[in-house]
Amino acid sequence: MLTVENLNLHYGAAQALRGVSLTAPMGKITCVLGRNGVGKSSLLRAITGQHPVSAGTIAFEGAVLNGMAPFNRARHGIGYVPQGREIFPLLSVKENLETGFAPLARKDRSIPDDIFSLFPILETMLSRRGGDLSGGQQQQLAIGRAMVTRPKILVLDEPTEGIQPSIIKDIGRAIRYLRDSTGMAILLVEQYLDFCRELADHVYIMDRGEIVHEGGAETLDTVEARRHLTV
Image (cartoon, rainbow, N blue to C red; front, side, top):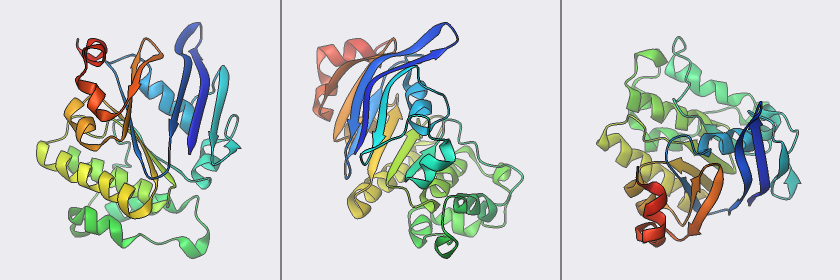
């Protein structure tokens, strides 16, 4: 289980997170929703070590991650799919996937077959440059690259952003498959309400850097939840 307790995060004098606490259990999909600019991506940057926290604790499988470098968090089992995908445009699809070898022991440096089962288009494009792929194909590549690291928890930052509906369905199937077949924890930051309603076991809603709602996916249709999600 990933556990976040009373997390504060600042960018200079500006406070982005205020006492955020949540858990992401193994074998469950945990979704964090909220409008733009409420701190969702800042939360993921804190969890993955992209930005230091001002106060609070981040722990995974009982180990405190505070102060741990991002590459060591990857070795600890945290796979990250960043907002905007951030694939390497001049590297081939195969080379992009192989960048996921970095945290692995030499004997484990192979591309899992599951990636091509979930995203068969990637297998047909192994020699193509990442920058030549469509946005949806790049998102599949970014998820595949994270899967190469054999994560225990997969952290995804708005994977449906700017993606066509058919690939959103493929991504949803992949996330559900990973939860059900591997028992990994999934922490998903999203704005697409229907996507979270279909997938999530548990939801949190953020507003102004704080958790303002928590509950099962069915609670997304309550008046309280919608108040924090409507523009």
